Image (tube, rainbow, N blue to C red; front, side, top):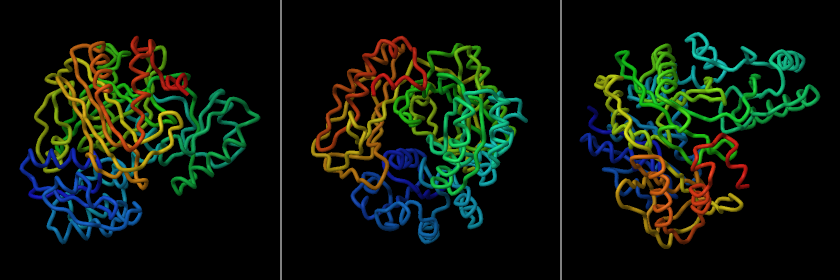
Length: 444
């Protein structure tokens, strides 16, 4: 096992990793920007180093500063969390070149799956279902029109790099194809520095379901079941569940087997998530792979009893996967609400000082957060301030428990999206499990 791990992140995920390190007997080294000098992750770590000004490009995205800190502090491994440099293949490669263990897959695998065109090709080769698509990146407008007509409207134009809905356009007719194609390429270039796009069949009102995989460095791979991630705003998840109300045991096994097959095909190591679209006929299609720990990993932990972050660190230290697929058991139901510092009506960010904070508790309630009373929620970073997670024997009980926990969650000084989550818990379609990626449109 490692002696010391540097955590190249901030907020609740940095706190989560610090706790995992402590339980493994590993020293944790935090890094922080000027804006985060009093942050919770800085207080909880065994050591902390300032790596730059508040702006993330000068601190949490500063590869030279982070690697220099690693070397001076004698840390052996680096955990990137999620966001920032977590899926940056160049950063992972720099770590490899410096003899630093990157806690995640190899840079080659990260680069392969970070490009959606390459990822879809790999999925097809592994016999994992994909939607009809252009089968390559498209740069010519006339070819784009020809491909769209062959696939059949409506189609999606999607950026090969990045995500979050940037560089993505839904096109319903031939007349609007060329304009949308140009706009998608410009957005992709502006957002990701890469104007490569491809064209894909549009799936009408699907669910977004993902499979958690774990893989050691000896070729052993298992999955931990699925997470339902359909409740999204502008392609950003705000609520997740495990298991999905749409899956039965047979479909779960089929999707899990597909995810494991893909992970084995690319010789994946560590923890990762294979994301699928699930249509109304229970047909699933590969969308992408996230080569890192997910924000929503706690719901899987609550249902399976597996500490995903500790396992991730163990595999990077060349420990073998001890679990067999048959030993994975899913017990009960878990829901996670992302508590964001934003106006619940306008969704505008709401930075400021937390003047009062009362966190919910009781049986089956977990709060992952990087803030405390007196913390400053900075305008420089993501608006996530906490993840409220509940677990119960049934989905109905989990919904009731989440409603109770949301009522207990008291925060003053900033606005949050708690009122939106409270509305969702009372919604008849949500209670019935009738959700898809368009679910939140009823609240806008």
